[in-house]
Image (cartoon, rainbow, N blue to C red; front, side, top):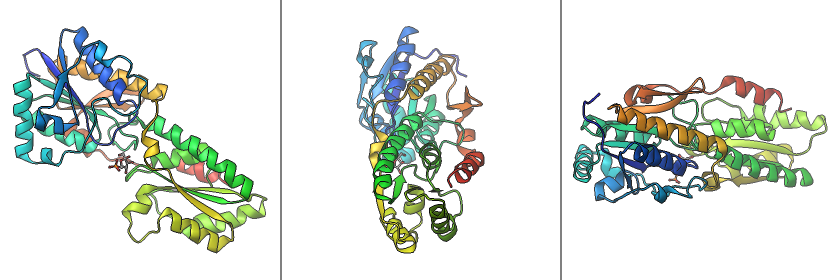
Length: 332
Ligand code: F6P
């Protein structure tokens, strides 16, 4: 805690955009202004600190953004900020702009930057914003619910056409190293099998035999969901199109692959993402107002809490094995 009252809060969005970032920017801005604290929006994540690219935000400048996907502050990944010289420059530029507290909306990489800047004397608060739901300290990240909904809508459409043609649809979803979008979409969309990077799988057992068994029960169309972490991280593993060709060869079921890609990042945020963003934005300003920095805001047991950034980053995220069991047992 520092004795000096925070006067100007900066807010930035960093890393991949996530639906709900605008709701967080709006909440930070309005909470701070309401308490007599000035707000500067920093453009393009930490890059904006390197270039001093920032602008004062007012109550009205954050009007009509609550329902928009993407981020009105733009976002970037900033390699310069990884070096000590970059962090030093960021700190100097914050000081020059009068920024004495910063809210960083992003993922793990962005939080490392927030920690480094906190250690240089600019108190930072991290808000978990990523569609991947891969922040270990938080049960839930802003953007995940919307991305999951988008993936579900797309997969429902794929089901219509797969069912009409008695085909197998192989769908690759995003998530980087994390299988959460895949597992949740798998349950929501009735996938036969979900492949995620966190769990071992066997193609013969988990796809080919399972499809053959299911066909004897009278089912002739299939959804297989594969998390991008499986196809991208293991260079020996096939991509979604190769997997579809393999399934067709082994089962005789005509198969098609769809990579959902960046479509999962866009769109109007869900109520859950908007509400969480509003809550976390408000909470972040309250921490800075109390002179507290170097914290990550998180959801634990459904409640908003905060952790030391390093402590939060060192936590381990595990797959929800209950959900995986549900997914496997009812997908027959
Ligand atoms: O972290 C969000 C995410 O969309 C991941 O799911 C994906 O692996 C990555 O970002 C894609 O990054 P880029 O926008 O640089 O292609």
